[in-house]
Length: 112
Length: 114
Image (cartoon, rainbow over all chains, first blue to last red; front, side):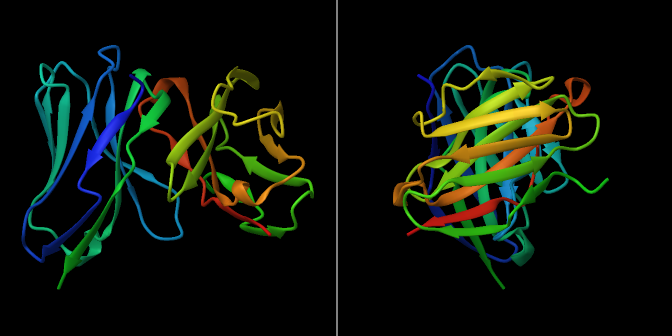
C-alpha cells in the first residue's frame, strides 16, 4: 500500500513533442503528490506538486493531471526540449512534505 | 544559501570498513532526511529527523546502519561494517515546517564498497 508505481521506465521524445509520465498509488491517505527532476550527478529537485483537492496544476510547460477516484496522476511536459532530458520521479506523502514514497523514476531523453 | 552540503562526494572502501557520511542542512530547516538511491530499488527514505530527533527510522535496512543529528546543522549516516550491497548514492535533504511542500536535496555521496 505504500508503493507508488510509475511508467514508463524510459521515454524518448522528439524536440517539441509532448512527454507524458504516469503514476499510480494505493494508499488513500496520501495527500500530497510532488514531481522531482534529477539531472545526472545531482540531487532531485522539486519540479511541481499537487494536492488532491484540484484535478490539474500547470506551471509553464509542466502540467500535473490528478484523478483521485482512479488514484492516478501524471506529468505532461509540453514542447519538450533537450534540456528537459533528466530522470523524473513522482512521489506521494501522507504528511505534507514529510515521509515521501518515491516512484522508481522515468528517464526522459528529448532528441534535438 | 549554499544549499544542503554533503561530504564526501565519493567514497570507496573495502568490505568490513566503517563508513561515515556527513550532511549539513540548509540553515533554518528543522527536518532532515537521509535517502539511498540504487538502480534496483530507486530512491528509498532511510530515516528522517525533526528538530534533531529521529522521527521515523523504519527505512533503515539493518543494524549496520545508524544515523545521528547532534545539532541543527549536522547529521551523520554511519555504516559499520560496510558490505558491497551498500554501494549506492546516499542523499541528504532538508526542509522547514513553513515550506514543508519542498525538500531540498544535497548533491549526494556515491559510495562504493569493494
